[in-house]
Image (tube, rainbow, N blue to C red; front, side):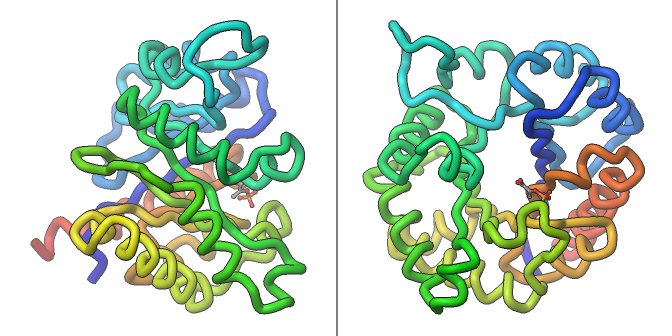
Length: 259
Ligand code: PEP
C-alpha cells in the first residue's frame, strides 16, 4: 500500500478567462478532501483564485517561477513574490517551457533552490520525448534531469515533488499505462534515494502527468510509486476534474484507514 497521501495538481496553462477557471473549481468550495488538491492558473489570475477559493482547501500555485530574486528582469516573477501572494507551490521545468522557452536542467536547478529558499514547494517536471523513448534512453534522460535539476539541493525540512510527464503523453490522449508509469516512477525513486537517502526519497511525492482523465486516474493512482497526478486538459472540465480528485480522495481515505 502506497503511504503517501495523493496530490492532484491542475495545470491550466494559458487558458482563461476567470469565469471558466472559477467554474472548474467552484464545486470544491466548502468540501473536505483527504487528498491534496492544487491548481496552477496563469499568474494574472492567482489573486482572483485565492479570493475565490478562500473557503476551500485548494492550494494555489504557479506554472513557473523566476530563477532571479529581484532586479532588472522584465517579465519575471520571483519565488518570494509568489509565496507572499499566497502561493503554495510552483511547477519547474514543464516540458512546454523546456521546449519553447529554452529552459534547461541548470536553470531548473536554480529555480528549485529559489523556491525552496522561499518555502514554496517546487514540482520538478521531468520526462522523455517520443524519440528518446523509442531510442530506449528514457532512464538516461531522467537521470540527467534529476541529477542536474536537483544538484546540491538540500531537502532537510523541505518539501518537493517530482512530476514524471512523458512528453509524448502530454495533450495527446495517449497516457502511459499504469504499469509502464510505475516502472519509471520506481526508477525515479531509486535515483532520489541515491541523491537524498532513503528516508527523504520515501516521502517525496512522484506525480504522473500526461493525458490523465477520469477513466485512467484511479488505476494510475493504484500503483505503489504514483503519488499523485498533474492534470492539464482534463482539469479545465469541472465534472472531469472533480472525478479525478474524488479518485485521489478514495486513495487518500484508504491510506488513512490503513494507518
Ligand atoms: C501537462 O501539460 O502538464 C499535462 C499533463 O497535460 P495533459 O493532461 O493535457 O496531457
